[in-house]
Image 1: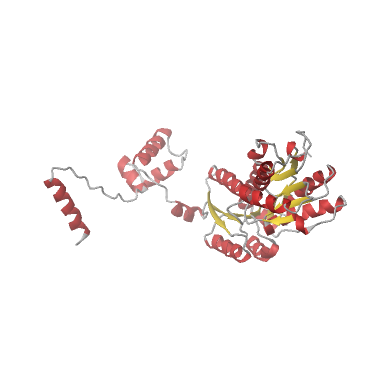
Image 2 (image 1 turned 30 degrees about the vertical axis):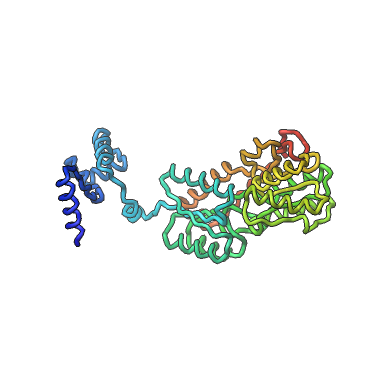
Length: 366
């Protein structure tokens, strides 16, 4: 039975039963022409008023905005982008949706973008090189105005370089000891890990374990190894645990695995979540922290400060990083000559926030 006949049958049935039935009508999309007709203005005047152009007096602008609100007018961003030759969309590529700092970074950047009239298109790669390349192709095909990228590794540098050479602004959010193929703003995670492991070594620990998230944490891994070497400690692969995600549970289970071997007196984790999970395990086993086990995390999350035993942690300066990254991307979007010069590298050096968990009660930073 045709849909219209079904609706008529329903209305007839309800009427026979003394019921009042209202069939909602699907409204068509409201256009600027509808606002103009409602107010007796030209379409051009309405368009200018919606853009808050000073060519239209204040009273008319307010009337147009009021009617637009009443009619539930939604601007056609696609049409506007065709006129302005800007999509007003920024792409953002993450390796892992489970990384708390990267998610916080994406959220802060999205807020900063929205405050400036941009929207964000988020993609994740699961740290897969080929999918990262695919995600870049997708964003370029969607004609985004710029891209933020946490690179999975160095393997897509040629792809990144080709995108930059096509004058598509891109800001990388991680660095390392190599020359990136595009502009970058990043925390020096090598230095952060080096400071953390060195601090434990300087407190007298010789058996320092490390829990990390695999390839995505390579800078932290090499920083940990360098600190051991510089402090005369032999690297022991048995004291390194690789996890699938940055969770309390993974830290808890890793601690159980590590300490079953005995001899470990200190633990450095590549995430506060991992460190706090390990701290929980130690407390459940009756181990004293820091007397029996010193623990240091990375990221300095709020939970680190308010843990049962406040956690020493490497501070990841998310607010500073996101502010500098957005400023740099805007500069690349508006200054074409800037995009043709040598890639800009802005490095942020992390600090070590020392608390009770490593045995040195101080609010000093290193």
